[in-house]
Image 1 (cartoon, rainbow, N blue to C red):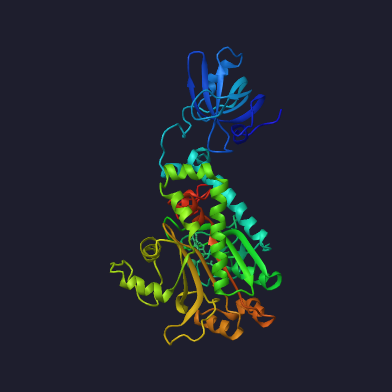
Image 2 (image 1 turned 135 degrees about the horizontal axis):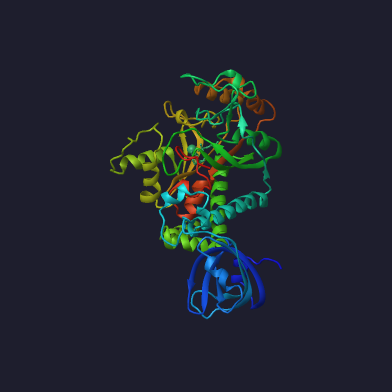
Amino acid sequence: MQRTLVKDALNAAGPSDAILLQGWVRTRRDAKALSFIELNDGSCLKGMQVIVDATLPDYPHVAQAHTGASIEVVGRLVESKGQGQKWEVVATTFKVIGEADATYPLQKKGHTLEFLREIAHLRPRSNLFGAVFRVRSRLAYAIHQFFQERGFHYVHAPIITASDAEGAGEMFRVTTLDLENPPRGEDKRVDATQDFFAKKTFLTVSGQLEAEIFACALSNVYTFGPTFRAENSNTSRHAAEFWMIEPEVAFCDLFGDMDLAEAFVKYLIRDVREHCAADLEFFSKFVDKELLTRLDFVLEKPFVRCSYTEAVEILEKSGKVWEHPVSWGANLQAEHERYLTEEHFKCPVTVYNYPRAIKAFYMRQTDGCAEGRETVAAMDLLVPGIGEIIGGSQREERLDKLRAGMALHHLDEKAYWWYLDLRRYGTVPHAGFGLGFERMLMFVTGVGNIRDVIPFARTPGTAEF
Ligand code: 4AD
Ligand code: MG
């Protein structure tokens, strides 16, 4: 007999004489002549109510079906007389597959997110995390769908790389560990013999530079993979390992890039609104009451576009006392991003044309800037509640200007010879951006901490699994 998922059983068009359900016990309530079990299999938020009659030969097994136990039920799908569900299952056979005793940590009561983080191996069985990870899966699917529908090709960028894509030096180094001769004594520094490729290599911070290689061949490409940052930021929106989506488009400028980013974000919101409706309602009930209104609002209006210079003026005129002072040339901090999106514009904002000195070496220099006010064609998409979810730019396609940018950032040209080659042979204007997958998930679920939207958080101090 084929297994039916709870999701399909709950949406059944009509009753059925025999269906097979397999899953885990959420709750059990024993009445005089029957027991009610909520069986959850992770296919959707809701569980199926299973009724086991005391006259059933398998009834004695019900006593072993504690919260957390895995069970298998064959039964009749019938219309429910109770409130809250259309269908229920009246068991004809009932089996406990794997018991769970009273030490099972996910008993039916409220648990703190901090506690659930400590049991990352069990938290996907809770309502909240089941919902988060279903939405995560759907979002990944929608991302591929968005790009594939538009003729973009999926490129797999390397995880181990020799180049620092952001030039920010926030990389994890890859070395071999000689277990026969572990480093001894005080000095445990890595030496050159431990470099696996006889060359310093690192975990990638971004697949952008490799995506540029492919955009300069296949025109429209995207990467979607794990990226790593050795920034020791202990905030609710930074992780050492996170996933990034990076489209790269040949023959595209900064404004085309912003259009793509806006269409992309709206597409993803629309998709999860439609395909994860029950999970999103759960979030709006238990996590963030404003969630659905905010998402619908974001879909309605064009995002505001505001140059960095205008943003600085707005912040200066705000009358606010900032923790980090605002002045032309300084990076925007979380408090500034939040003010722009939450208080001033009250909607997503794309800030563009940032000062050259605070942005990466590969960004295209804006022509005709006043002295001391040099900018690059960078753009960040800021959203209420989170701040930056996208960082992107038009790339510097002119060889001489790129070299000047590298010199400004003290980068060694030799290490980027292949990147310079892209400008030597058939260079084209091109642009792209990176969307932080977890930040997008925080935005669509209302979950406030990045540790709670990633299956296994890699933030300073959490690497149990
Ligand atoms: O702004 P970032 O650093 O841009 C890049 O990496 C470019 N190479 C992207 C490109 O143009 N192809 O990072 C892009 C996005 C950020 O806007 C943010 O959403 C996310 O990646 N991000 C992080 N997410 C979680 N934890 C971190 N430590 C993150 N750092 C960046
Ligand atoms: Mg950024």
